[in-house]
Amino acid sequence: MCRSILVPLDGSAFSEHALPLALSVARRSGAQLYLAHVLSGRGGLADMAERASAASRTAYLERVAQQIEKQSVRAPIMSILTGPVAETLLEHARSVGCDLIVLTTHGRGALSRLWLGSVADVIVRRSPVPVMLVRPHQPTVTIDTKTTRLSLRRILIPLDGSPLAEAIIEHSVHIGRIMDAEYTLLRVVDPSVLGLSAQDENAGAATVAQPLKDRAQAYLERQAEELRAQGLQVDAAVMVGEPSACILDYARMHSIDLIAMATHGRGGFSLLLLGSVADKVLRGSSLPLLLYSPGVK
Image (cartoon, rainbow, N blue to C red; front, side, top):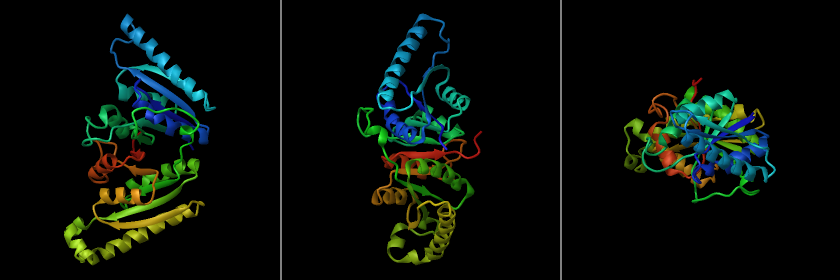
């Protein structure tokens, strides 16, 4: 169920690229949309500059809200907040009971404050609810009937066999039901864990990985059957190779609309689960990503 969606906006056209997807989910689910802007000044709204900034940002959010309302979407609730940006947004999400946070992110460079930015990085790591990251495809975005009817019909869920990775499944299904989606569960067998190089694999040594492939397929089929029992359309696929490259290749070859992954919520993306894999997927894909950190309260 998705009853409320938070979209942080910083006043830039870049941040507004999160709106079409958030609006599409809100339109289909009937969710309440929350628009929030954070003033990071430490002195509250006591001085003239802060008051002027608050008035300017309020006017900005009102203009965005008016564009949204023209598309027959439920009127958004606007908030001007003050404090450390990421922490203030997370507290606001908790206070209004948001089920999903949608925000824009860069896709360049390494997974760091220079790339995601400190705000998105903290939100992904500390959010108790799923976070959808959107990559802009163009300098500006328009809010119209077409953009508020965007579709997420094919969802890719990479799994590594751990309960932690499986935590994303429930949230993927929530979004998928709203968007009438079909799902693919993907597990990648990495030949490097067997001491094989890519050249070894191509030379025919991949047969060494066959038992791992068989176990991976059996595991995915068990997961898929549980979802099929709920009336969902689910495929299962096993690939051999470098994990991030396989995820990106599969997404491109099968017209995937959304990649969903679980992450640890401490110290950035965990190297034990996705780590550099999530980093490379985020950098290499223009698709929206749904990320969730299990265990965050």
